[in-house]
Image (cartoon, rainbow, N blue to C red; front, side, top):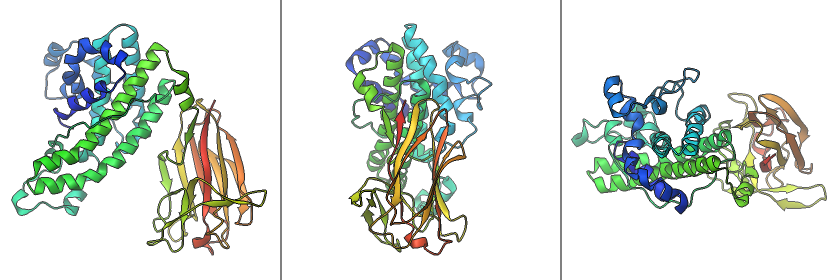
Length: 413
């Protein structure tokens, strides 16, 4: 995002906060534009530190990370922005300091920390940061009239408006949980924001600036929504006043709709299929809603994730999804596993669950004749959960290994 977009994001986020919090922030409202651009202002190596000190003698408190973190400042963080699990330390660093500022009646400090976080979220959803720009130039080359087009600077110069936001949500009852849920939200926002890259380019190449700005609005809105959720969550943690209804909303996590931090699927079949599997072969095939066989002999519809182990042509005959999880937040993983009753003919697979890369459950060979198997796996202090399915027929039934993870959930302690 550019220097104009970042204040739009922070203002939109603050405007959506509950009235009690919004009113308390009124005295520092004039500081929002500058606070949202703190990383750009003070993470500028061409600006002398004496000049930075004159702007804010306390700028290092907000814009430098301790030596024990992998980066010293936001723009030198040594991980790709697509791997949000590795960026969580940024949230874990700033959030406690924002909490401390609030508890110390340091509203300017609180707003600066929220502004830095807002800046981070804006950069994560910026079109120019979401794709390899060399590849983008090859996919969508500029017309002759735009021969000097710069795929980073010119894309980033487009400023979208912030749309309507929903009321902010509590992201956790501890800083690590807030950081974890924030990483998932940012991952989702980045994936959604990619759809606007080509329309923005097409509008720019057609000299239609208003359309380009309209297409740049949803990423701005996504960043503002994450900022609002994080600011609200930090405020709740700072005051210690968390409504019971909001605690209840955090009681479990539905992995059906939670983005995996890493995954491996057969490219022909595609990723995990929400609430069903694809018939075979998958090209153009619709999703068939899942039904599993149960121990009482019935066949019933279920919700979950349908997968198909890899064919084995270019790797192991397996598929997997890894979810990073905050330690000591969730008590167990629950699911039911089985074969799609309507699509599976002679397929056979093995379901496997790993904690921190170590196998803790193996189902044995499962076919469509077997009833769904309920799982309840303790999580203890695990930091990752991997759901894996292996072929159990020597690769002979690739198109019939319609495996299904029904109702996969993390259950809170």
